[in-house]
Image (cartoon, rainbow, N blue to C red; front, side, top):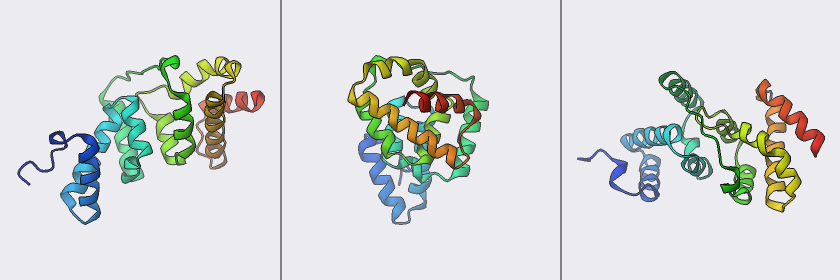
Length: 172
């Protein structure tokens, strides 16, 4: 315990599962450390890191209040440094599968993330994606469409995304 579970001492592929197991077996220090690490990497990591934490279920270790505090704290501390995606560099086949497997809580976090303009980028490239008509890209569009529908059904869809949902309804 001399390093208090410093996750920098191990690769994250080892550190996260180890911390998760220790927390599962009642180690309160491990529980605190993994939550702090997940929160820090969710807010400061790359899109790939955020995606990994969502898909592997680490995001689900955080309670809703912790997520809201994390997002509002990030927004207050920093000027929003939005990251736009290079659409051509995204693996839409993989991302389509990821989105399909996400819970609504995970998807909502992804689209509300203060650092990434995920849905704005999607809207910007939507017509091009539809024209390409490759299977992975079509599955990507369908996945986002269904998640937006689910959010609307649960009254969790922000008003700024309603025009996108209407556009998708027209195009599909």
